[in-house]
Image (cartoon, rainbow, N blue to C red):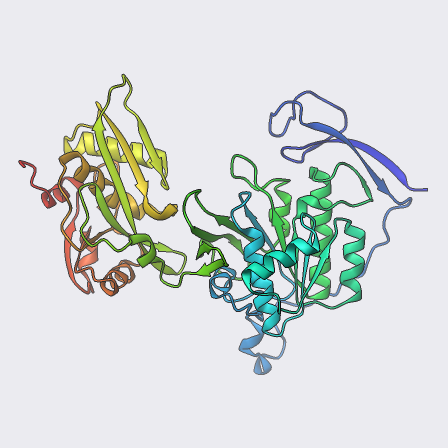
Length: 455
């Protein structure tokens, strides 16, 4: 007989407790402990022997460079392959998360269809939609002829049996929160069920050399739902982002054991599904060459590619006792720091004014190199003066007002040159190997020379 062990599991952080309590001692949230029962066979599990090999090969003459790099399966969706590091590695596990309705299922259906047409054996398992619903979406996207095996199933045991009978190169499970294991006495979608189901699927992927893509839900705070241990289990964590009202979607990699992190892929949502955007700079900048006051073009780096994006600022008189500070697509704490530096180091007053900052196109900027572009956009909005025409801006600002250099400045300027920009406002260290004119500044107060302060 198997032994049943009852524990109390926090549905917020996954921490286990031997007895019930009103507050979880791990994440300090209230009323999140739920009793769950685990069944273990008597005498424990039979240990398995593991093959052990040395890190360094003994015969250096036969060392092949191709053995050092993992093999890749190219799906045919270039933006998806870029974020994965050049393709999907056999035996890897990928967790894809995103807000409801952002297009996760649409993206993966296109990926599996293209991969199947490229000769890969692909299976798409959905726990949220029926097979006919998937076929209907495939018909609207025009990929009904792709040889993709479909299944609508939520039982982990049934899914594992099916995947063990047939050999697949790529398997998509949509989503991990809908699966349940009969070995765990817990509700579907609970922390224990998600952890157990993800662990079994990752284990199968490693043994069978099948690439496994798991779809995960996100909470209202934007975090991946379920225990954080799932993110540690998988080899790559991808997030699919998109602002409501914008057709653009950003696929961003936050973890990748086989490639670079912070790589992005850009897509545009349409009636026929997602369309790849090979040149996101032209997409985020728009077609208007004449920019009004409060607008600055930032030359950024996302992963391995340079991206130009417009930063928009608006400064208006405030009717409130406490002026409003609103920011979209950038860190609000960083905005507060830039405003403080402009006031204390440059003598500009924002105290009685509402300040709004927006990154056009729905892109989210995380790198400090956007400090100078945001500062120049704010000053341009305050003085109601446009920045010099055809200028890109980048640079980090310290609390002393110093403009510091950033990485890959030459790459940023070369991308701007391709799109018709003829000069840059940048740190003084950007003068070396610059492909066009650079207005270099070592301090933020000197950068105010780009404006007519008496105008």
